[in-house]
Length: 131
Image (cartoon, rainbow, N blue to C red; front, side, top):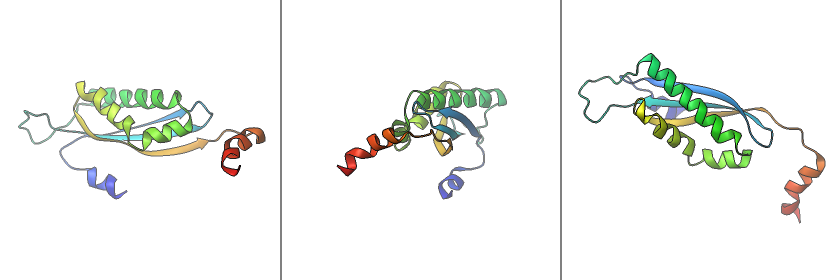
């Protein structure tokens, strides 16, 4: 929460998006993403506000990337992607053409549904550690 509060500043646009995605192993996750506009290199103006249309385009791109990254992986791979925040970096790169962004993060992940586990599958997963 402290990190989040320190990033929110005046004279820039805050863009948020959320999306519900199912992983390959059946978990339903809701990802929340946040990003901020930044000044262009040659900009003199104090404010760097994105127009509403640009905000909508960026939000659409955020949703696309988050959906693509999570749908094709299982929960373990998703967690491995979230730790170095590679999803945020991808979004930053993809949206550069619309409006330059910085501080793009997946700020929260909620687990909405867990798959029902069969006992055999559960023993498979935890079998290696116990043996």
